[in-house]
View (cartoon, rainbow, N blue to C red):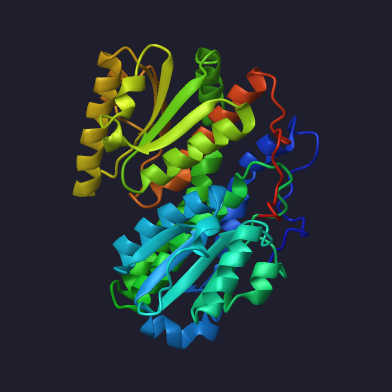
Length: 383
């Protein structure tokens, strides 16, 4: 299994002007390797979760504890696990977990997520969970890290070394791992058959190829959108359902490398106060993708288009991430970046990449150091 010290995913130096852009382009490799190391002959995880086998049959709830981008991945994982496996999931800020009431009556499994495996808040959350008698599952990108050593069971992402401070390939690898965990739980609980599991795995395995194909056009379109809104200083990112997690991640990427105000909200919450901000100076970035085979996804999409129409009617500027072939969105958004069709729960892995590229180009245009943003460190090892 690859660790951060391995080098098989590295693109030759000199091809990219900085680590962040290189790592954005390495995402197909990182996702592919994460799948390869965790799935064999349609068997997910093999023996990785064997140390908590009894807990897997007895737990009543999953609690996800994480910080920053890892928590945004956890928010997407919450919906993946609830929708596919039918389990109750709560997502906690790792920094708040230790100060919340105990969960002695819920028999949870606590999933902790951290790229480095050394994040202080997340390590502390895991130790508190273990003290409370819970079993833990650590999702980390570094073999032998503190959180991995102390966990009840480990799931290893295989993104390779991530040198830029902003999380990109580690984030999509976490989404991939959480999707695999959702499928594992769904299969174990009898919610899906082996054949349906295989179909989901095939869809997942296609994503790296799609990302490789679309990366050049996403790069160009994101660069154009960044130039169009280079003078913008206030951004709002909106998404419904599983896409809310990606709205939060898109806003986090932009503010951590560009130092501008950006906020991620559920799209339906816009009219509950935040619409007071909508004017010609606000840029609204909207996740408006859809899975045409999923009626719930289509309904969410229709409501999201209505939000775009509202923003336009109030003089706001908008960028939409939409599904290829959608012409309705282009009539109401100032800029549209298309992603290929995918199932609802896999769309987040596709749609976050153009948002990463938008943040990247906006930061570069405004003279920011994308690899080493001010005040930031790769791993927050002090509380």
